[in-house]
Length: 342
Image (tube, rainbow, N blue to C red):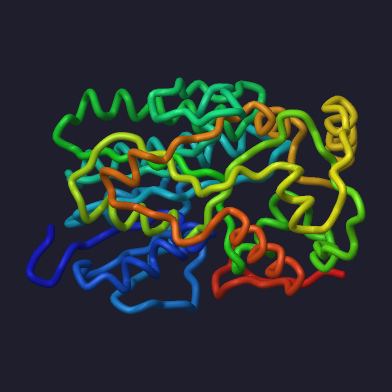
């Protein structure tokens, strides 16, 4: 447990987009004595006061409890987005792996669990105003990502009932981007052969304006700061995390100097479904359906109770991410490795 040397924090999924930012911020916090990062592949990157352990949470033989002994908090970030054509496989990693983490937290008597939920856990909601954390979290059932995030919300309901002394925090961030995540996210959603250099204003004269395509974005480092604040405070419950302004075709058109052109939902979905069916695009049409229905989130609770304030606007986040795409940016971990295509 915590001592004069500071808190001991364990982070699962510590080498991904969010994990690298969380580990870095925790390693810079003088109130944190040590950080243990869990990942399938141990990186060469080692921030101060950080150790690594190789753990595959999708394996039935995984025993995270052994790594949680003596921890003050566990931040659970591990998640697999692919393969989207095999939802049973992502279920084993994301749902069954998360349940193993929850059970291990209870077994090791870790006092704090911070779980990475998502805007994707929310039921369909409004695009013209923001909702708070009381909005239903039943997800969009046709999309594996949303189905899994919503299921884990119910699993945490049961966990909190059975373990009332454990402080549980659920982070529900918007879509998270940073420059170093560009190559990873291009591979996850666009495919490994999608040329990043195409993400240039001069390459786009028109942008598709699809009804319902209005979402929120957040810099990964800003989300990581919310995780840091959560483990170093006494808050409980769910927190929406998002930056302004909402992202839609009008905003993107201004960024790219391109003219939005209205495209029917059915036409856009048919194109995505065809590319996904031919294994040309990893992102599924089911996820596209979900994105069109996600509500906008009100992050007032995080600002008031956590004292959290994002340092980047959504526009700045996207500008940084697009620059990362053009340059094939990455980081010194296996999931985040940079690669420039085209």
